[in-house]
Length: 426
Image (cartoon, rainbow, N blue to C red; front, side, top):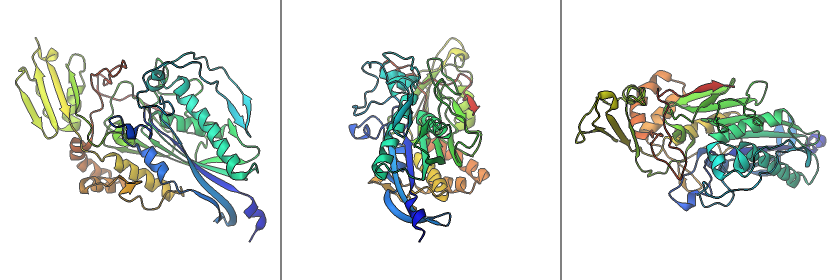
């Protein structure tokens, strides 16, 4: 055995960035959110310390571990109500090299409430702060495992959902640009897995790079990139930023149908609208969901279509008559995207358990026959078969993510008036 190679240690670390407002600590609180796919995948990233493996024909000492980062806008050890309370000055952004602070740019943000992390992705619980926090945790893990001895290589598998996917992309860019380094250790991102990346950042929002946050996916940011996106997300403040390289899998569902977080028995979603204010929404429901949305001018008229209730309220004209639509959705669509990401990652060498099974840490992730057929069509890249199955999958399992409700002082989740999601690529 090559003792020199064995002494040249390889660390492989999974970095998992949860979505905006999501945290595994919130789930036991009840009535807030359920486990996201980022949370679930981190639980099956297999830890192993100091085993000897053949890597590229050499015997190497390899250690595996994972680091979970709570979602953007979520305080550590919070009770799930992260819109409340004001915070003081955020920690200044920092670049870490071998445990030393080597650069401290100005943050330029003072006394922001937690809601700025949830709404803008900024401040002490925002994207930039969360990535910097992840650097600190990663550096601490490296020192703990190696005892201060510099490893030869560090391989990173990075996953993120929503603005956590923004953090994941920023993290991977930071590694590429050596914002995070550990002496002369060779550090690279092997796999970048993204669930429906939403890049709305700052008070104005945008779909591209934000000051201090870099999202580019060209230029060898990661050896493999997989991005699973939502076909049915049309909220105004949920623009999608695609990757310039890698694989994109587009599937039925709204944002959290892809990344997870909906409660198994989530309450019905309700949206009321007029054609004058939202000229594209009626066509969206008719063409995408196969619903009959004729004008209704009676408060007594209620149309029931499966899990949907459609009701009209009278107006002076058809364009001002209000339509109210409500739907309930079965739980389980997130487990299709969970399986797709797991499959792609395992085939790329990510150390997840090989068989994802029907439960993770006692949490059921099983799918029924209909979802399994849809999953298998997507696995085969059989777009025609997937599209045949989409309508019934959408009507039974997909959530309507937009509504008119103001939640704890935060603006309602309204759709784009034309019902078309804004999309950019970086």
